[in-house]
Image (cartoon, rainbow, N blue to C red; front, side, top):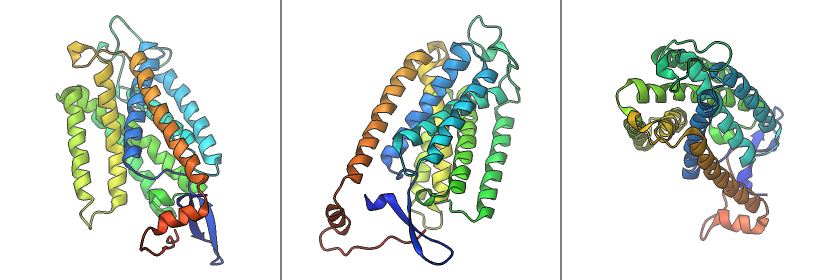
Amino acid sequence: MEKSDVLTDLDVAGTTTSVMKKLPEVTLAFWIMKIAATTLGETAGDLFAQTLELGYFLTTIALFLIFVVTLVVQLRSRRYNPFFYWTVILSTSTAGTTMSDFMNRDASAKYLSDGATSLGWGPQGLGIGYPAGAAILTSILLAIFLVWKMSGMTFRFRDIVSFRGEAMFWSAILVSNTLGTSMGDFLSDSSGLGYAGGALAVCAGLVVLLALMRVPVVPNVLLFWIAFVLTRPLGATAGDFLTKPVDKGGLDLGTAGSSAVLLVVLLGMVGFAHHNERRALSLPSHQEDRREQGPGREKVSRPAG
């Protein structure tokens, strides 16, 4: 078993125990897959709610139930599985898309496809608007982080291994993806920047975060969560750019076609990640020891927690 898959922890008696990691390493591939998953979440959410005219209300209920099922599978898993993890990320992105739309939009023609007078059964939308919706979601996200902080559990991504820690993590992910959708829609629809301009604005923010990683006083864990929120509006604006009509600044590729292509891309990347995990697990321990030590280096044990 690869040593990066095993973390050490201390129980109450002071004895060192081994626990399996449940979340992936944060690498460039991680962020590419995150953006692909959130873009697919945007196009798939719009596919069900708007193209198929199921409406924001019904689609939100259905996608939230799917999120719960995928989350249970992830929480019951004993170790990191790329398919389980990225399925939950995708389900939070699709559910977050319709949750945000239901909160912020209404039944006016501005938000309906050409010729449509309503979407699905039930309420068409609360119509509170993007700024108010973003403010509410930001408050909820801050409340989750406050409870998380008061619980004493770590915010460090690679060290989240407990059931409670994962539950807090996924609660924050669901709200952050919903918040990111509101931010992305605001940039695309209300700011005047358009889809491409909104995506460029988010990219500029991510470049700033990348530069701040070299500033010692700024905690990397804070930068991670800001980047996690910002990559969602990047996916939202990219998804709208792919699917919206040309006269509105999009490429008019359609929600179905765009979702199919993005799904193939994401499945390919997740399959590659799964292959790497299986290959790492099958690596003989003596090869792993040599890889960790490297030429002229002594093996260093990993810190607890």
